[in-house]
Length: 582
Image 1 (tube, rainbow, N blue to C red):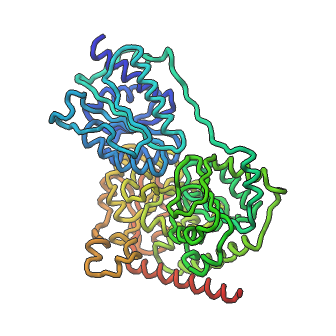
Image 2 (cartoon, rainbow, N blue to C red):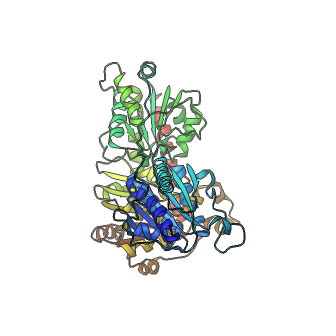
């Protein structure tokens, strides 16, 4: 067989298996060495190709697609620094448990470590940040090698989408010439004679274990729900039912998505970040058991609460079999499908009827009192907290909101309360970085009915290149850009008390207005300096089918002072209430 025929059969088998094993979308960054893979991907009738020239942005875009669908997405690039630019998104995917398949082209073995251009060591390039790595052999045309290409592809995809979800890296060394035979009618047929199919089941615990566990459940329990890679309707209904039956409050992180569509569910506590900052409240609310699902919530005060009560049994339920215990407070890790665990708890409850305990009522009362205090943010004309407070009313039903890191996610944690609206909240909380947020949101927009992004100015600037896909593919996304001219979160940290170098090292004002950047990518731009401006801009954005950026100008120092005053007011309210109750 000729080199071209070998290349076509081997790569064609791999590409065809992408589709057969469940890949629907491949995000391609153009390059020479990846030519045969890219061309055969583009030619395949069941693979959708999205082209993005910026590898870092492309990988985050794919991350957003996979995050919103819980299905693996493939990314493809050429050799050298192109592959290195995938690293931030790969690392985020690993720690936030998102299924990605990174396919990188490479020089053949004889050109490695000899000074060849565009060549770096790509073997185990992402280190421990992928679930599996394979350095593929050079293409051969035999049926056996085509079957091997299919097996590696299938294993890679199923490894990525087996819990814990995560990224997998396949590296392809390729010799020139690089052009496959696209006219070959059998280009996707090699290796099909003995194709191995894979299936994935869920992890469950034995009935006997649950009988003992359910009998030992005390009255004063707390359920903590953080961001979850699998938070489907089955789990949602089951965990709420557990809270009702056992009389336990649910401390629901906004990214758990338990605050949406649950306005009347009082057992879902959504202001704990504010009242658990009060030491007196943390001690008064000491539980007898804590059951935790998902990753650690964003709230630092909740972290302190878990640490304060290390003497209390704390169970971490994780179908992904990780070790999610940054508080160092876990008593037992239970590796079981989360929804199945809840259903088993319900099965072994004594009578299954709803129970309102004094313990749960106490949590509900303090939650409602703090909500009233937080509502005072509405008297401000315009602030970052006020925007977060009203989002659950301003966003349409079935909206998807990507939330940027640093202050936006913390404001949402504080002010985004239970709502009847079905609003999906997403974030990159694996590593909590500010990079790639715009691209991730655009990836989410492919499957979202009403996609939105809440983001700060530094994070927006960091991923301005991501807007290119909105222009090239006509993607719909409304971006609420909070421009406080710098890193707002640092104004809330101890660094703010060191004024000598605060602005240059931490405040980092960039003095940018983003109108021309938005226009560059054919987006609609709205400048907002008052609350009425913001409301009008949000209404106009609903009618736009493309990119809209609503730039909201706020004062960083004023927002920091407002947050401090709000917390002081809440602390006084809680202390006074506790004193009255004694």
